[in-house]
Amino acid sequence: MRIPVKDLIKGAVHFLLLISLSACGVTSEYKKPDVAVPESYRGGLISAKGALADSSVAMLPYSSFFADKTLCLLIDSAVANNIDLQVALKNIDYVHQTLNSSKLGLLPTLNVGVQNTRTNPSENGAKTNIDDYSASATSSWEVDIWGKIRSRSRSALASYLKTQEAAKAVRTRLVADVASGYYNLLMLDVQLESSKKNLALADTTVKMIALQYDAGQVTSLAVQQQEALKQSIEGSLPAIEQKIAVQENALSILCGRMPGAIERDQALFTIKEIDDLPSGIPSALLQNRPDVRAAELALRGAYADMGEAKATLYPSLTVTAAGGVEAFKASNWFTLPGSIFGLVQGAVLQPIFQRGQLKAKYEQSKIKRDQSELEFKQALLKAVGEVSNALVTLEKIKSQELIAAQRLATLQGALSNAGLLFRSGMATYLEVIVSQSNALQAELTLADIRRQHLAAKAELYRSLGGGWR
Image 1: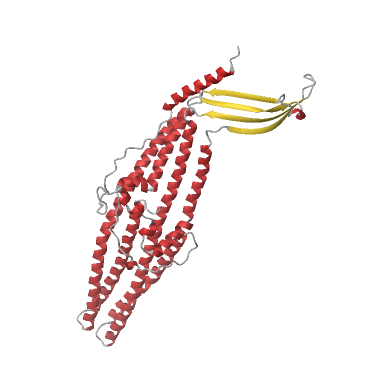
Image 2 (image 1 turned 120 degrees about the horizontal axis):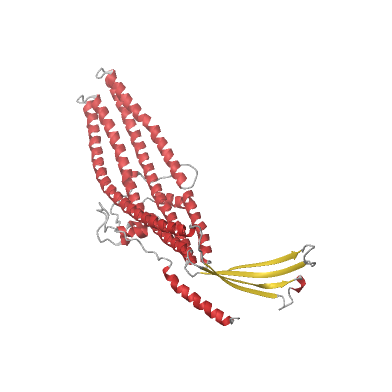
């Protein structure tokens, strides 16, 4: 008994509606994990309870955050030419191609072809050679009943957005690394200048003690000890110059160019100190920190992959259509409508036994989802911890710098007094040597603390998610 085509179409529509409605419970929608985020950062004298999310310095571009224009130009060069950042951007382009392909997943495939089949029968079979010429177009469409294709598309989108966030994370780290390297270079400049100044002072002291030795006021030991101090300072100069060259080379490589000199027109202690840096609230890290955003997108992708794996356990419906011309002679191809053929086929495939592979993949996708959720929580905890550490470091380093500056002023005064007392015979040469050594070490320490101060500000900016805007 032949069933009318109209009834077949009506039945197919009803079937599709039925299974589409039942498909709602197959794939799982993404649910953001419930993470208890504190209202403010620990040790956040800079952060205030109830602060607005957009009050964070992370919202500022680096050209506004860093006052040194030379540093901003250096960061511009690094952002434009850094090799690691360019690789990250290429990853975006690569994943974008997968995303473009996934967007077309709901469309049918279409193939066209021309075929010739020649049959040469055996001597005991048919006595006629048969040629069959055909030209056809074939289309196949998988009905996305259970959301498998849509889950695949969501996974591709999450991967694409994740690579974007990964590139932003590379950029934030790059900005902080350039700033830290630049401040280290300025510190080395100060240390070199201080060492040269103290070398000149030590040379003057050697000459003064030598005159007293000639006058019989001191022994040769005094001359030798002061000469040894001078040689110690002189020996430190090549080491500092080496560090300067190495730091310049490292900054050049960060900027994607061959090692070379780095220009700087501002000294370490002339950079403006602006420590009133609003940090906003911890929940803002979900939007500002690229690594946290990337972790959440990875979790979204894991949910989509789990939905696709679950959908493979259910029947798939594929509709195939073919049409074209066919004839035993190529010259009869266009003898229409006699040469036209058509085919429509629908197939429902329910996997029954696949050696446990489909079930295992689904269970693995659930495990991957759980892992991604834990990694997201860990990324958020790490981000809040980094900001808290940066806030505490910045607060304490300010106190250290104040004390170090006071100590340096005290030791410089003591050095001046030691020189006057030594000339008047009221102090020994050992007191002069100790005073010179202490003053030099205090200058070097203060320069290093100032570098740490500026680097802590750059680290706070990075940990809040600044530098990619």
